[in-house]
Image (cartoon, rainbow, N blue to C red; front, side):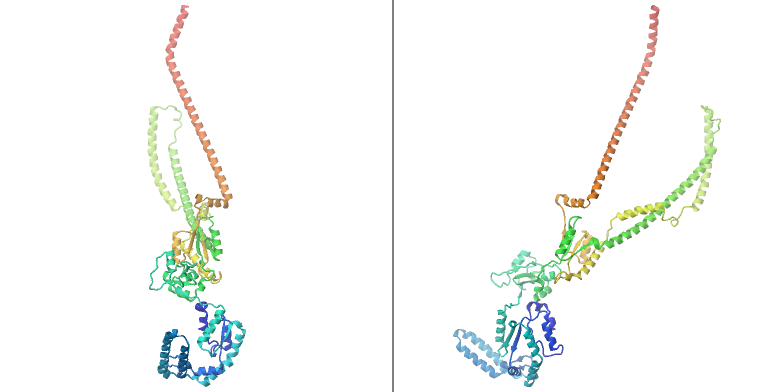
Length: 627
């Protein structure tokens, strides 16, 4: 119990005064072991106080002790001995006479109180007091001798190792008040400070401050329980965050009900339990590097926005680790890709088999139809052969035509009858052929068929290019498992580091369903950083993207320009060809129009020119005859 108390947070803050150790009892530890415990304490004693007292005086002091059985309280001789009490009264009266008259009223009150206490002691308590067996003279002497034989020598060696200026030796014959004043004087001369007190700023009967803004809340709390008229409490670096929760790796805002002051500053605790822990030892929650965020950060942004570089810088600053979701989910992506490939292969094989089977059925049907058509056309050609005599006449007569028509109708009727018979025969034959069809089943079609391999290859190429989308639960489960592994080594980040925090997440999808899964698992980050490039329509990110894939983009740009030039040239050629065709058509139309015009003019001239020629010949004959 002693060691547990010495390791408690309260001792770490306020210190300790260790008394009656080493002990005379060696039931649990020997005297050398107890001395070693003192030497190896985590908080070693800064000062050693040795109270010296002669053996006779010590023996008389022990034998003069009395105990009240009902309460167990022990009284020294000067507390119960009537002679000593009477001497003390006379001494006080003599001192009062020598002092000034101004203090007579106060001394009379103190004298009355002491007289009442002495009267109670003499009348009520003294008759009930008994002496313990260990306080008998012979037993007291044995205890003193045992102390000298077992403890005195080891304690003298321990004091010899102590620096003399940190070793106080006092006279045990003096009363407790004189010894206390002497020790306090020595400690103050050594620069020893008092323990810093922690004051709760708001009491239960004061007004409720919940719901106030930070500025107004701190302004009101700064005026509570001041140590001086002009010494207001100051705001700390923690602000409204709870120091205890922050030390444990959580950012939780404190409440005004749990506001305290320590070393001139204000701190707001989140719960009553956190307040109790802070009151025991506030220094463990305030020492550097605190206040340090637990580093639960998630960075999102487009590619080439600098989020990966920012994640690494944040992790280095807070001595954390970057959790890249692409790296953590690489195995799951590969597994999902393999499953997709296998599923795509199986589906493509079924599609290829169905396509090959359908193709074979179509070929079989075409083959059967070709055979039927061959039989039908063979019979019809035999019946429809034309005699060679009929071919000799180029312009047949009407009777011949009508006879041919009648013969053709007769032949058509016979052909229809024969076709009906052949259809019945072919239907029965096709049914028999289908029953014994040579179309293979799925099990008979080889998987290495070219058509099947073509379908499978095209499907696999599409599957390799298709993106893999994992469910949100996979993201969250992998992140939770990684954080749990990280918490096992978080204590080595820096002295006093919390097990929580110490991670910066990169490449996490900023989607609603993923954030809902994070909320359900309790893995929401404290800080979310979103990188954007809103200036100049994202020209900076586009430039970075171009620089990263410059060769590929240049090739695509050149190819696109070539394609555009070829397309433009082709369009120009098509336009030119269409124009030439249009001109050619126009020339043909104009030529046809000219020919038709000339034809019409020529035909019109011939019709008009025949009577004129006759008149001309007659006039010519007249002229010749007249001449």
